[in-house]
Amino acid sequence: MTETRKVALTVNGKRYEAEAEVRLTLADFLRHTLGLTGTHLGCEHGVCGACTVLLDGQTARSCLMLAVQAEGHAITTVEGLAPSATELSPLQEAFRDNHGLQCGFCTPGMLTTLTEFLRDNPNPTEQEVRIAISGNLCRCTGYQNIVLAALDAAKRLQAAR
Amino acid sequence: MKPPPFSYHDPRTVGDAVALLGRLDNAKLLAGGQSMMPMLNMRFVQPDHIIDLNRVDGLAYIREANGAIEIGAMTRQRDIEFSDLIRKRCPLMHEAIQHVGHRQTRNRGTIGGSLCHLDPSAELVTVAAAMDATVTVQGPNGARQIEFAAFPVAFMTPAIELNELVTAVRFPVWPDAHGYGFSEFSRRHGDFAIVSAAALLTEDSAGKITRASVTLGGIAVAPVRATEVEQALIGHAPDDKLLREACESCRKYDAIEDIHAPANYRQHLATVMSRRALEQARARLNSHAKR
Ligand SMILES: Cc1cc2nc3c(=O)[nH]c(=O)nc-3n(C[C@@H](O)[C@H](O)[C@H](O)COP(=O)(O)OP(=O)(O)OC[C@H]3O[C@@H](n4cnc5c(N)ncnc54)[C@H](O)[C@@H]3O)c2cc1C
Ligand code: FES
Ligand code: FES
Image (cartoon, rainbow over all chains, first blue to last red):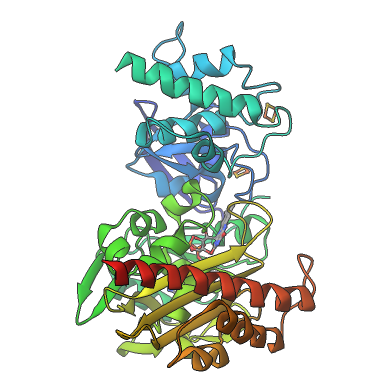
């Protein structure tokens, strides 16, 4: 009794249409059905933040959504943050320059979370950055360089404005 | 860590959702999914049917009517957090909601889902108890109202029937010049509180308390109204000594015990959190008085 449905949605500006089992999470749909493996899965129960994507511009944990719920919506994954195949976004540049990642497992969730955060809070304090990433676990960096990268990115984005 | 197989339904109206609830066996409602999806992924629940409320029309709104703020069940926690109406008319909720999970979970999580999930330390549950909220549920025979004090019937079990769903919650507003405070203790930002406290106060022109609401979250299976503290404050100026002595009575409530904290630790936290929430509420009363 495997129930499936057709799911039509936009991911990183591109239209996709695929059949999905109704119980499939959006995270598994992105990774296995669409082959977009940039979105990572750490805990699969909403705690680690690695699977964070933007749903119509708002962050959401893709392990806590069903693929069928994304029907008609626009998703941005980490693959969609860079302006082109040869350039990084200012936030991604700042992560590289500040050593904001080590193994990179948490990075997709950090980047999507901070993309929304810096859009809504262009001039954040360090404390605000720490609260913003409080729902994202990183086992490598000790967070310090992620915070520095976010603050640096805020400066770069302001300068570019 | 994948959801078990189920049939999926996405009704467009409350009527259709109620009809599905009545017709289908072992069905579960899905709102923001921030508690339901983890329970599905971990297979704590194995429903045969999921009824998704996310495409139901008319369940997401915040409005003021007849001295109360009414919030639709599917209103996202994020929309409450950023609502000017809530900030002005229900400042306690604005304050408390900052503690509910993280931005990513508030973008999806709803007020109806939080109240129905009824986690003992959920901040919105504590606020609903503090403000004497009324829950509106819709069933096959129409709508009915449930006073929030009667809403929790057991651990994480609301007083709704299997064929009913919550459509709205009403929060009677306090006068503009009231004081409010919310204090919680959790291990990390965004974690559920171990114990939280909400306080609401009004005073007369002489600075004596005329009305008090003091609520403890996380201490028992449902929020506890600290009526002894409320009574002790009425008619008095809330000085440090009175607050400290009154809040001591919070130690006597039966407390739950789990991996996070033993009962006596929760009882101790209850005395401290209630005092801190009241101190905040008092400071805000004073800021009105000076204006
Ligand atoms: C990492 C993380 C941290 C969190 N931290 C906190 C926290 O600090 N404080 C806190 O309070 N919460 C916290 N939560 C949980 C909170 O985010 C959820 O939003 C909330 O508990 C459930 O709301 P929901 O809309 O997601 O409902 P769902 O998860 O979809 O549903 C929850 C339950 O309510 C039922 N239900 C939903 N809507 C209705 C309705 N209209 N009528 C009848 N039944 C209904 C469902 O069937 C289900 O049983 C956290 C969650 C995560 C993932
Ligand atoms: S995998 Fe989704 S939050 Fe951890
Ligand atoms: S860089 Fe390894 S988990 Fe964050």
